Image (cartoon, rainbow, N blue to C red; front, top):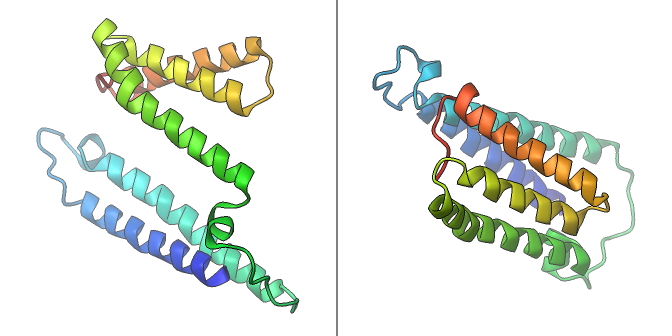
Length: 168
């Protein structure tokens, strides 16, 4: 498993580095400088992925050096369990993936059809609320507060922080 994780972390480092480099090739268009242009967002995301992947690789190598010799790994486990964990974790991963697909392909278009300006906020609220109710043990009152705060934060970040229109 060490080899797979190390390969994955280094592959992410390489891809993220390429994203950062290619972000500077995005035309500025009418933007006065790079940070106001279209290339700034891919550069920021690429930088975050680059740093996290580099930390992942370093942590793997550091832990590998500290690890003492141990018994050979079990050969009876299948690849699904090695990659995605036990069956309960795979079920949770599949469920959140399905919730995300429903959010992107059903909730957002439906909410945009209802109200083009604030529909995305409603869809985000519903997605966060349902996800938290399924995956957390929080009281409904707190789930409501967290969902509302997240949806409002997304709206404020898009409209005032990034000065972008809301997704439709």
